[in-house]
Length: 316
Image (cartoon, rainbow, N blue to C red; front, side, top):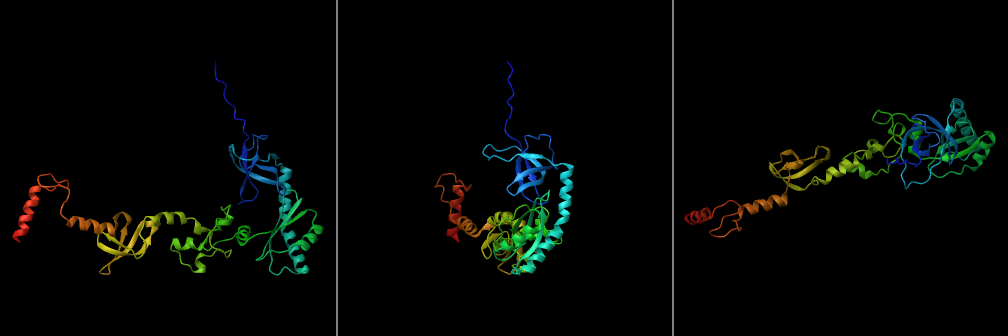
């Protein structure tokens, strides 16, 4: 009797992205198993019906919650509509800015983008401000102007930089607009651990916040520093006792200064903790206590040698 193969009845999930550099959201594509990577699909989201692009497929975790299904693959008409409404976005943003100026009360607000969904049924105005802004009156006016469901969305400086794109201080395209899908928490401590100057121009991005790249090598620096002595600590080296002047985590080494003022670069494996070094020196000077007269010494010294040493000392 042959074994009947077990069929995996779990639903298949597709990772869908709604913007060029954005988070992946997972949808059930069991009804359309022929879908491929880079295909466009229509899905239902918390913000209404949207068009997204498939970036990959995964097997669902048994503990995961239920996922919404993909409604259907996008048609050529859907793609044409998407292109049409994207071309209307700059004009919509200009109208929003003009109405906000005319209405007044939005001096500290910067409107940065207007985004239609693929069929023009929804329109989102994205703006930034230092404080929370009441956009109720403006929303009412815009809802009367545009035949779409209008939403006002306030975002932070990092999101603005992501939307606008451009080049960073390093001369490359901004990380947030090329590959970062999430903003990790960043602190000034990350710059200190990496030995980066705390000059604002050195650690601040074009968005006015701490640079996202400060987090990239932070963990490697933390792990490397755990294996190295701290600054000003005295250590043993192949050149003798010295004090640590500087730490080079990525080189796995430290710069030390000797008693005569000479500086040396010493690798971690060449370092000897000072207390251990002194203990070894002290032990080397002490007589062997691991054997008695007439017994073989564990350190290799012969009892006869010890007796001869004592006689030599007495003669001296």
